[in-house]
Length: 532
Image 1 (cartoon, rainbow, N blue to C red):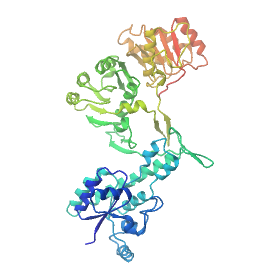
Image 2 (cartoon, rainbow, N blue to C red):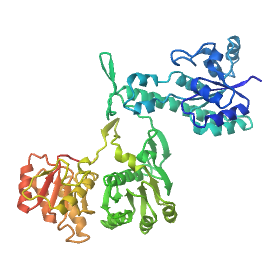
Image 3 (cartoon, one colour):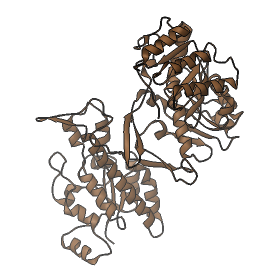
Image 4 (spheres, rainbow, N blue to C red):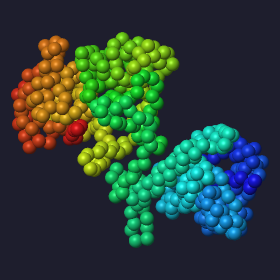
């Protein structure tokens, strides 16, 4: 029987030695290159260098080593074709049965803005993708392995009666083409950000949101129960290495739906604006309530009670660990799902009594640090924008933010605190919105209306269902300017004493005059926060 051979050339060497030992114990000869060959030899494994197979040394700083007919012929030869085998024998080409390759770390190099253009170019793998594609094309005869996570199953398949199944080899092939496809997409996207001035190539310090060429390789995380409606199929995808909901962990509950994830996203966006313990309760991507508190439980209860009727069956966002205390509060009513940065085992035991309740954890810290881009599909096209963050409210008000008091009366210290809270929540409510808050919780929210007067009316209607005096002494926030004074007058009638808005209307002075007539304090932020 001919010698079985495995060609191994990997940049990610995790799990390499035990896997290679497993191949040797099953009768495989190891053929390798460069650093991989050294790692195998240092582990005491017998290894043949590719240069010994081809008769040519590695050259041009390693740019040329595996691009040779004695390698690719051994990969691409169809074992069921006598003519292929005859040609291989004529030219002294030995078969290669397994190709274990993962590519140069181009993505890692590209993620570092300090990486020079010349170094970046050298991280573009040429031989590796050729080996992977060749083996993936000839998957019926050659197993191609691009991920260390598959090493154990490869050894198990080799031990199976009759050898590896065709279905397994085909699945490895699909993973391989996905691997090279993502790699090429990353190269194309990165080079699309490079500018050329004469003979000088420059990379931006920060990756642009909208490069000339945008390729987004996505991996399916899981199928979803359904889309916006039960008759629509849906799935959840993310880029490799994604954070936030792209790297989330599903801890318990029914399968997620498309709308669940949209609501979890909306819930997380609000609480990410706060450094203090914060909670949000979401319905149909809008908050029923949002609040801060002394701890997660305090914040959650306040957010839920802001509109308890609407909160029934809602989605919760927390910016603190989901512990046993807050889990008990959540389990006391019907909630669809909750997202938090972490969850304790004690909390999971409590929530397990609600087996349909979905519990998701996500890396919130990385989301606080990153702006990132957002993609949204429209009919036949994709829109791209930078993520909206309320950076002007990161510090206490009044402070470093470029805020402008436009009325005769400035806000009181208590009003400043409440206005900052209102502004951070307002940015994450569907436009047009006007909402009313205290310093630590929402009181009434008028979301997604066609005019600001309508938004105020909706908020007043919601408040009246709780307490006709609820909005007296509150503050109000509007995500965009008031085009006329009627919206401001409606806010004053509702009982608010201070207002925050971006300003920028040609009728700003009319609105300012109305605020002065009513004795309101009003500030302009100079920054709009529409959310469509």
